[in-house]
Image 1 (tube, rainbow, N blue to C red):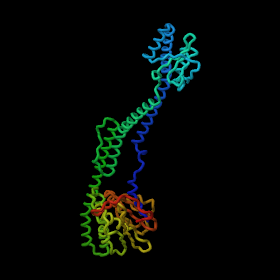
Image 2 (cartoon, rainbow, N blue to C red; image 1 turned 90 degrees about the vertical axis):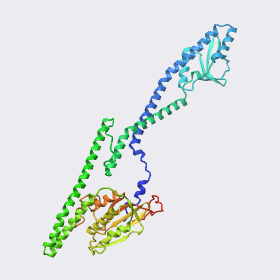
Image 3 (tube, rainbow, N blue to C red; image 1 turned 90 degrees about the horizontal axis):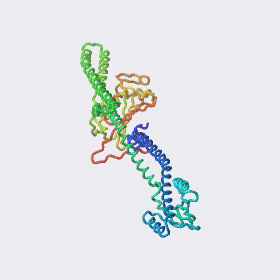
Image 4 (tube, rainbow, N blue to C red; image 1 turned 135 degrees about the vertical axis):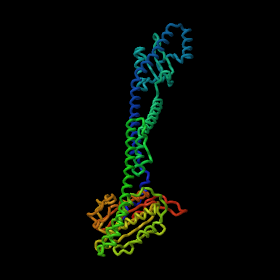
Length: 474
């Protein structure tokens, strides 16, 4: 029967893709998607609305420059015209060149803005106006116009009227996205910080640390402040209930000791029938054992883990029952195997499992409880299995067996006791940092599986977590 805990520690430590399921990242991605979508939509809207006024403004500036240049050339004599052309070229960067019939030119239509500028210039300057981006392999903004019957080229520096390039838009968009992502991360962190604190406090309360993490009751947000106050009050109430429960169980158990002692004494002195006296003494002993269970269950959850030699604990637990005719125990535990835990708590665990097997794990054909205790090292952990060969229980009842006061009466007879044995086992193992699980096959017995931290001998490093070889079992 393989252990359900084999390799569980290694699987728990494997890095998982938890980013996609984190509330922080989910909120961050939603906010980032919203901001990026708004930025891109705003950018496209801005570009669309910016083209028309920019095209009209550029065309008006060029048309005004062409008209002023043409008027100046028309109303100047030949000598002044030469001087004017030279002055425009030197001071304004505007060149006036005669247009030849064999000039080669490329239309100024490289983009939507250029086409709109060309259309507006033709409307402003009239038919016959030519707008080119290159003439005779010389780049620039070329405007072809006529003065009387002569044709000229007016060459402008295109950078004076150039549009915002794609690289500029890309830089601007990247900057806006980076700022949006940074803002989304900051906002998400501020939104999820109270929830993260609440989650951490909830985990600590679940572990029984009621006072370890108090939430801020002076938070500025009304809803968060109300939740924090309610959680703190709930933790205080749970701590009080837990304390009252432990005190009540301990008090009841303690108060029952005295009348039980008197009953035992009265039985031994007053009951003449030996058989009746033995039965009454057995009932009193059973009540005393139930009281011990209550005391164990009410024990405080504080354990100082230390290296414990597992074989010594198992031998101590089996020594008292090794001569029982109704029980046969087989132990397969390495002599040098050590676990991290509390020796007293671990003794209670093994003793409860052995006693549980003695009571309920008898083989139907022989009436003897054949119990096997096995243990082996599994890298940084120790796997322990205590198995009987009795009737077992239905798989549907396994999850109920570790609940306090539950007994599987339908599957196991002679259920005498308080029903706390397996509850104490699960509780003790959990507070020692281990893991507990039950498996059962009806008609073939019940197996208790324990996974405990391994204590390495001094001088030896702790092995790295790894999977067991395929097929290896405990």
